[in-house]
Amino acid sequence: MGLGKLLHRHEERADAGGTIDRPRAYEIFASIAFAGSRRAAFTRVATAAKPRAGDRILDVGCGTGYLSRILAPVVAPSGHVTGVDPSPAMIEYATRHASGNCTYVQAEGQDLPFPDGSFDLVISSLAVHHIPADARPEALREMFRVLRPGGRLLIAEFRPPANPLARHVIGALSGPAMRHDPRDLLGPLIPDAGFHVESEGDLPYLLYYVRATRP
Image (cartoon, rainbow, N blue to C red; front, side):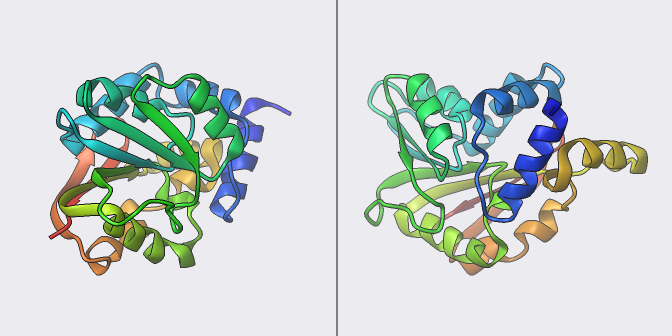
């Protein structure tokens, strides 16, 4: 089976509430999908989250830990990044490649195993579309719960290209992951969970973000 078909199958499975369980294949696919600009794309996501030295960060749907490893040196030496993902294979891969101030826990976004107010910043990149639709409200409520009052939230998702031909090509290659409009995907989830939305908009590399705070 080719890499494109393999990742297409895993995207469909994850959209149905399963997990992506081939981290090495995912890493290759992600590198290809961002056309050599993956580091730049996720650096923009990290910058949009406005991490601070000493922050306790939770990365929901961390996958292979790629974004966590970008955030880790920003919050060092006293800060810490915790990643959660439902896939044991992803957690094992992320742990093997972890920075010194990163830890990874197998868990679902809608059932976070942390006390109330444990984090200063919760970030989730390209992950909400993998959570079953009926579980997404609970996942956002869980993100709210584990943030301290005044804590920050950053959600980043794919946005389809405006050009119809480019949209068709990317959708055919990536499967359901790139077929949604992020504004429809997220809808009122974030304010309904209790967050105050501060800003939202497009980022380069076909990304869209919402930044919010817990009152």
